[in-house]
Image 1 (cartoon, rainbow over the protein chains, first blue to last red):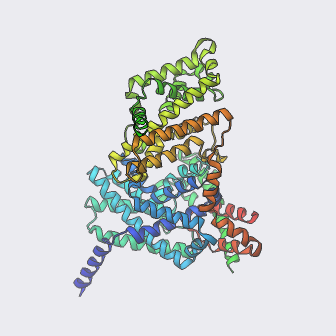
Image 2 (spheres, rainbow over the protein chains, first blue to last red):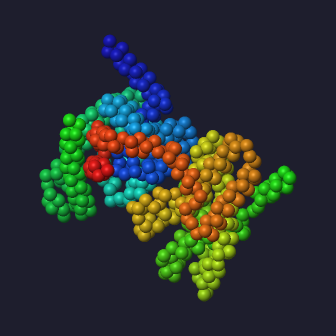
Image 3 (tube, helix red, strand yellow):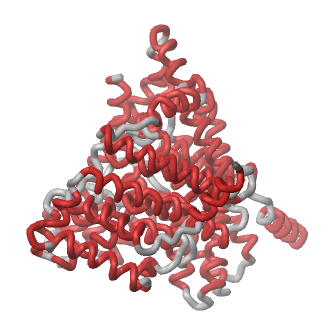
Length: 303
Length: 290
């Protein structure tokens, strides 16, 4: 009985890992990515005044991971743009989201249950991209663990890592904000996922790739759907990090997470690290407060 | 009637760019650099930086296309004759005694001639980019358009980045998002040449090159004579953008009178996980002020 269930699970995972991504899953990936672009301040006005720049931004949101991975591995940056059908699909999504009459498409997509489905499907694509990226890097560098991790990470987190460049295209230049300073949940999860897949690829993790894809996809989908449904900005890793990081990196990191300490208490002892942590702690706090306020406002409006 | 025209176009499309048209291109590019504020002072203080900027102005499009196709961006340095030519033009423009060259250049017919010849090189670059991209990607017509555009008009992108890195240029105003006239006309050209290359356009290549060159030279010269920077594309573009992107505005104009609050309601439905939340607040403010 046990054996049977294990077998069926393995088969399920295998068939799951072979589902073709192209039309449906890719479509939802594009929809969610361009939706995030539309949430950015000024994106709508930009699309009215400079459609070309807005289109380029949308393409970066959809294909940023490929572009960045190609850049790191020294392949042509516009390699992915030779997939005409994907690019056309993404362009169609961009057009519908920004210019559909009455904003109909946008309203449909933003309807929460629909959006949750799309978000879940996007995570499927993300995990698959990480796996493919690591396989690809393994093909180039057989023992390059760090290359594999970096490629997988970049493939998973996509445009977030090149957000500065993407903002530049929209005419915003804020070099002081950076994804690496405030890593969001998808970025962190992609990093951890990339490490797991690298371990699997180098045979340190005794599971098959299909199973790992299946398990990690389930994890990502449940986390992301939960976060989206509750409008939460916290990440499931927060609790874990709050325990581990003080041990590894000392008090400075702990201050960043609890927001209890003030900057002055952990200044001098860490030569380089102290000021940086201090600097990042303050904006993080104010941002969280702001988000708290805006969320409350939103719920009030929805009522 | 047919054959002399054909012969003319064919002969024209076989013209070598090398000495004269390239010189005109370098001349116009470096003169554009020189007219920027502070460029002449920088050339005296730091000749090497000025030389490098001049090279970026001259070879920017090629560099951008090399970056996009993962070829070495410094490949342009391997072309010794062109580098020497461009360097000597840079030298005489910046360091010629009595500023003879720039005084000569300020004479309008000379400017017109040089600008017209520069536009001719643009056609050649677009065609070169499209064929080059086609050798990598047989079927990737988007890639062909992009590389053709990068070769023809990528110099502005590269030089913008260069001045961004120097810190004397801020992208806050949307200036650089406005596609300049050369960028637009190059985009048009690279789309046309890509279609020609994929046999969607039933016209021979030399004819197309001839017609396109005449078109861009004529528009450029009229622009320079009439001193307008906004060109003939404007009405055409206006109707096109109204056709393609105007849907929502028409509807929203009608709607605004009836139900202004509904547009705010959609904003509150929007949920946004794990993203920059202060931006969200800002956006809401923007919406309210509308």
